[in-house]
Length: 412
Image 1 (cartoon, one colour):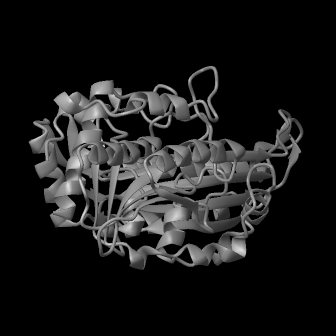
Image 2 (image 1 turned 180 degrees about the vertical axis):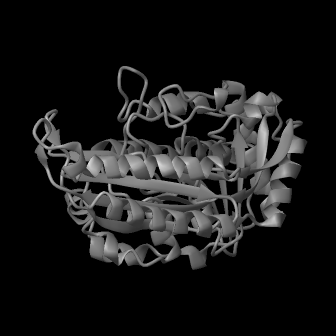
């Protein structure tokens, strides 16, 4: 089937126009997008995307975990699932996750225009809360779809004190029904297009990254409690300063990660209380995100975190709670899909290389249950999770063509 770039124009809006349209939902004047889980802005994006799916003749639904699903019910057998997510980090970019969903919609449009009849169904999915920005529940929708036990997450709260259970109820969903979203056993394979979120493709002037593996992740929430006291009258040696404990953990973790080539570590959210300029902090509540490409290094950095948090708390005379928030081991993607993506990219005459993913994705959840694959297009200057996140329009269009070509390769 000829899906080459000289035939890149699809009916309706272009892919870039679709991305721009979705950026309105949660968009700010600085170009950033904030569209967190279970928010009105996210469901506005769902409605817009669902309408585009219906225009293509797809059956559209939202499952009990908040996943948006469009089904092209043709052929026989288990469907190929294609997609990503529509939620964002706070003040993020307009491509992360969104590209994978929009590209899947346009890929189906392209295949339909070419008269392609899949031998098996093709489903498009936008997973709920991939980012985990609001409730520290990263990959919530894909984990529910995979049948993971999420029953302990309902009481996690956002910065305003709203629990996940309450937020779901406010949007018309019942947290106690999340398990009903488990459908991974109905799916035959999974495919995801994403921006690289790193500098390799852009730096090497390449167009398509064929993803071979996805990094492992460990997440924690840490609460260090000391004693709030007067900043001017409390001697330094007698303080139980919770923020100093957090700072020491952050610096130790940074130093450890810098000595390991395949490890990254980040403390992205910190809350200090009481929060007065002249008050010794009595509470430091912060997150830890650690990643590694091998299971051995992931176990080692996890042990380092546990030992370091306990040691610092003892030395600073702080009480501490260390709560694991997520844990995913590294994943090798399905070799047959890796090969299919590369064949598709070369069919489109793309400059291509195989590469690992240093970011987590829904594919690493679904890929533990069914064969999964991913492809990347470049991120300009490697920037992501920022209003400056950008990709050239020609790379977006090429990505859609390669995605569509990969669908035909996988279903051949």
